[in-house]
Image (cartoon, rainbow, N blue to C red):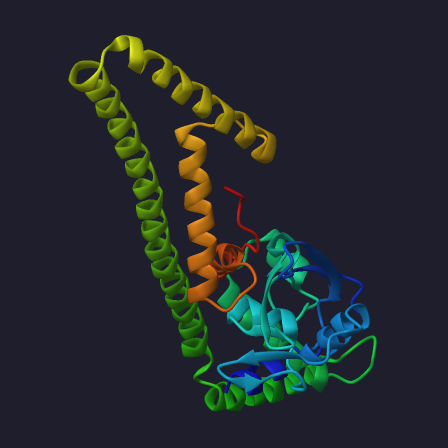
Amino acid sequence: MFSKIFRKSFSSFKNLPNVNNLKIHYPEGYNKVFKIPYNASTQQVVDLIRSEETNAKDINIFYNEEDYTKNDVPFIDLVLHNSPNLVVDGINYSYELDLTNTAPYYQHSDLEESFREHEVPYFDAVVVARFHSLLKQNLSDKQLYTPQELKSAIQKTLSQFSDENAEQSSFWSVQSQIQENLDKTVQYYAEIYHSVQSKAHQQGHRLLKRLIIFALVQYFFLMYLTYGLYSWNVSEPISYLLAISMETVALFYFLRRGQAFRQTHLYKEKFEETFQKLINKQTNSTNFVRDFDFARRKADFLQAKILYGCTSVAKK
């Protein structure tokens, strides 16, 4: 259903100079930005990535476990309305599209500037643009038309539009379903994120508790030496050696980490280490946090596009 509707909707992309930024996150921790045309198909995007990643054996785009690599589906539209996976040699690569530069409204209609100027809602723009496209097909290639020719072309267009609308009456429900699916994806990502975040906080708290226990053991040990076994004359040099040892550890920590030996830094480091470890274990992606952020921005983008006719969301 998806490919049938959107293949027809976007089949009129021709000679578009506009491009979009596709940022791909690699397992090694860096990212690359690819310039892709608005009308690029999934196969064209894969070929573009393959031209850069010559060592990659398999590059595929999957959606709902179906391989969309060789399907004639516009890549940008597929990504904006769904959450397909970009798999390179068995690894699910995280990626983002620049939503501030995506194709507005509907198949780059001739009426697009007017849609934007008058802030026409997305659904209304879809109807008007499709009717306009059918009307152009029914008009002969002339500069002037008689009233009868215009009337005949409009009547024919109305008939075609009515038949097409009856055949694709599910289009509007598909749009609503797209928004619902994106919201479910965001909710699913949020549950994973908050679950892992909670576990990472617990690990950070455990580290701080161990430091507290170590401090208490040291305290009671010195108290026992001072008032139980010996006196301050014996425990004083021991406490001095302990202090020097801690200072030495702090200096080595600074040399290795480039920051002071503080509880806040230890907690943050433990939290981030645990968070990344658990995220990588629970999700098969190179950068889940960016996936989560991109899914939220897509949902906001589509909602703003449908309700207000705009095509960009202000950065928070």
